[in-house]
Amino acid sequence: MAQSQASISNKQFITMSVNLLHKAFIESTRTHSKQLFRQLSEGGKRTLTQVKMDDGATVRFDVSFDLGAYKGKLNYSAFRDQLLLLMANFVESMKDAEEPKMFRAEGEEHKMLFGVTAPAIEQDRINIMALAAEVSPNSPEVLLQLIYLPPDQFIEPAQQDSGVLGA
Image (tube, rainbow, N blue to C red):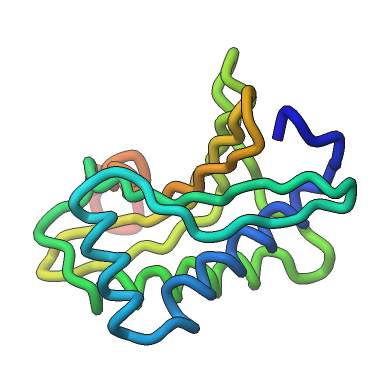
């Protein structure tokens, strides 16, 4: 959003992003949603919409997938269920005026990862979906990325059993 002077809060940005994903994958027809899913599964990005900001500038929102850490073969129904869970988790996390945690890469503040996840277990495999965003520093564009995180970073190692009642 480099060419726009509009400034929105993180909560507004997250709300807008979740609403755009909802419109693209949930509100649209199953045929359109499934077609978008297939296109994104093959790689690249697709434009979701253009949003007119308060200052009159137009910002393009794109979406992409990062399936690098996905375990198994992703199908549309499993993806849609997990996306619904992610959106519900965002809604839950923003209750009581709370704002989800946001992580930014050092030196790349235009890239962010939101601290809300949607874990799913399918055929004994854990897959964790999250939402990331990249705001272009050079043009009025935002890339929303539905990514799968490596599940091992969320799993605690099993404790060694030290006997009855921890003795």
